[in-house]
Amino acid sequence: MKDPLTLINYKLITLILMNAKLAHIIAARPNFIKAAPLIKELSSENYKNIIIHTNQHYDYKMSKIFFQELNIPEPDYHLGIKSGTHAEQTGKGLISIEKVLLKEKPKALIVYGDVNSTLAGALAAVKLHIPVFHVESGCRSFDKTMPEEVNRIIIDNISDLLFCTEQSACNNLISEGFNKNKIKLVGNTAIDTLSKITLSKIIKEDYYLCTLHRPFNVDDKNILHKILTKLNELDKKVIIPSHPRLKNNLINTYNNIKFIEPLGYVDFINYLKHSKGTISDSGGVQCEASFLNTPLITLRPTTEHLVTLERGNTLTSIDEDLTFNKTKHTDIPFIWDGNASVRIVNEIKKYDTHNS
Image (cartoon, rainbow, N blue to C red):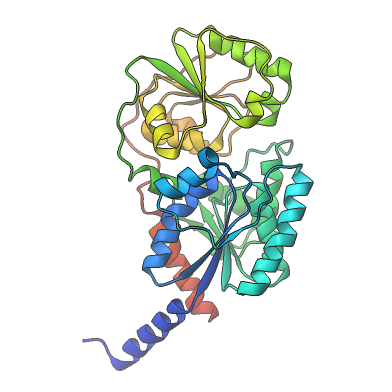
């Protein structure tokens, strides 16, 4: 039997949690996938979730379908910021998010990854003295020509809890002088989502899957043509779900490449799982392919997910041959076990207890 003091403390903590309002900033595909399991876990612990969607991705195939497939509650706020320059997205986000935070007065703001809306949310919150919890903290490509890298560094420096997906991310934060008490190795919430979906083969033919969206690969039409020409020469058909930025810059036709409309999350993961190999410039796809044991070529000189290099991810420039590392791995990366969200909620509870 618990002693009376323990029971009183338990009841007090429960009351605190039942009244705790947490806001979430989501904007694009990677955010939806990372946020879905954490929102569900927080709800099961009686937290009230305020979902703020900036609408960086806003059409059905890039946004709404993810809410349906991942059972994410309808956002409380749609900010309608959509596309624009980095300054436009960040500036509009900062203004709009601040208004919501002033109205809702959440106990903390949870931000995901490294998109411009994540930065805007973190800046708005810290200036209002609202604690910021950063999911996927400490990732570093060490390439500041990537706007995401700049965002990551700033967000980490103004966050109160730093949730890391792998040990290398923790090491980065420690080497940068962060308070070790803020750094939490929890795992990858995107893997929480991935580990719980049902996979089935959609098409019977052998194929490679490709995703391209980084400006340095698709904004210059000549560079994009060079990449697509290499893909066109591969020994199997290449399927590319077309990102809007890529579609706008096509200058030729390629008989070995099949361009399709953007895929929902479940369909994309099924295509990824059953491909003979994947070529991508996405950080999220690196983690998903590594978990699924799909051979991967990353069309970038660096990666912020070092653990994927231990599981078949090959970094390749557009001037190199596209050669897959087809070594199969039977283990999964450390604590990519589908329970990252549980660990994050436990850390938030501790934070609540110490700061209430």
